[in-house]
Length: 149
Image 1 (tube, rainbow, N blue to C red):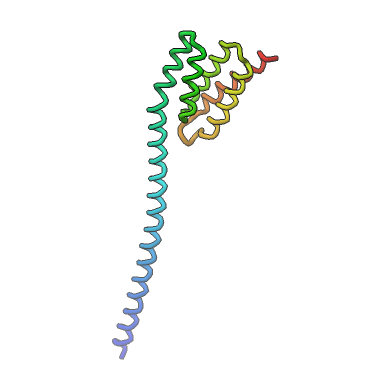
Image 2: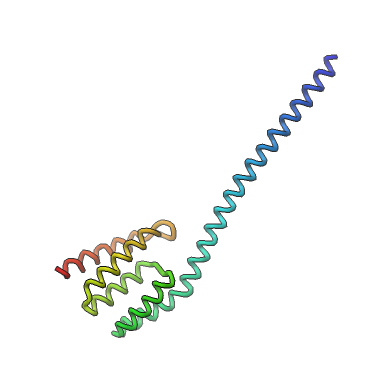
């Protein structure tokens, strides 16, 4: 009699352990899927950023060459192409600002610097550390505003 009760209790305990193990496995699967989805999303974002860099960096470089050669309208055109392509880096906005400064178009210089600060603030820490670029643009903005007065 006691042996039969013991076997029934062991069967119940085994069923409970099996149920708990299944629930744990399901929870682990859900957590694993969540982690996998997050990693996939981050990987996709990195690939997207790499594609933007590959497409827009050469355009930015052409703009820099044009700016240094004194072809300011051409430089602005290249910078605009890179910007529309999604290229958001401090150097682009710095170059833009320097070009407008050479053209003595202070209102446009201020506008592009403010846009750069706004866009870089959005991505700071997500794509990389943009704090140095933000600081430099902020200083440039103060100088441009002072020159406007």
